[in-house]
Length: 325
Image (cartoon, rainbow, N blue to C red):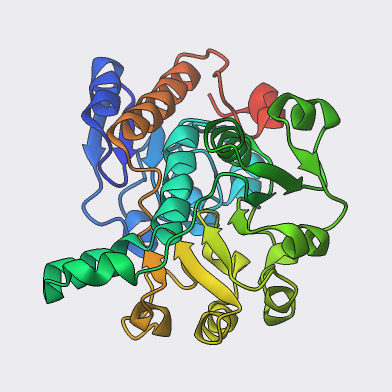
């Protein structure tokens, strides 16, 4: 009998084809955690996208031998519980790096060129003369401040520094000098120092308790007047109410975000009323190419564990020698 794998939310077909080659997989009838508990009793593996995998769900799956995360992070999985239960967590780090980095650069350029304001003037008002009144700036020569120089932050720095010829500075407590030198990035000692210098700030820090509202009203006041803020990291990094006020008074020239707090955002989110805000529905990682990588890498990790082979990407390697078999 083939191993049983529950796919909580549908993923790209390349991942499903990989699973089908060696397992019997099925799509969960309802991805809600309270419903999922009723479906995982016989599961040998779970492939999950964004649904929370809580301790309750994991404890309801006594045969579970592996969890595969469709993406580069595991913040929706109770890894502590998985590790206690002897369940390896495999994932796909770097699979969406290029997709998110390109999205961040797109948001910067869209705001710098006032694309949506110009589009609305022409499309809705037939105002071709808007070309004389809609403001626009060049990013060449401007200073980009990257907050968090991990894989995605580094990819943004590379594209903006070498491609757009921006001056790139970065704040990251774990920043290695050799990485900064390779990317031609200037490290700064504090976030406040970065905010004071940057014309554009791009957020790529993790959503830890310490980073909650990393960009606060106090920090926004320390930014250069007329700067652009971009968030493709996590919604809780930003105090949205404070950003709204900073945009209203001109302290910020623009805000581009792919992430919100909470998610999905409320329909009456005041940011949606401002013309100098560009929003997307947490889709930065969802390019065709990234979706293929996330699905296939997660599926490959699941299959490796089920065959007793050490996976290429494992988040909790300490569990390997005492894993469920």
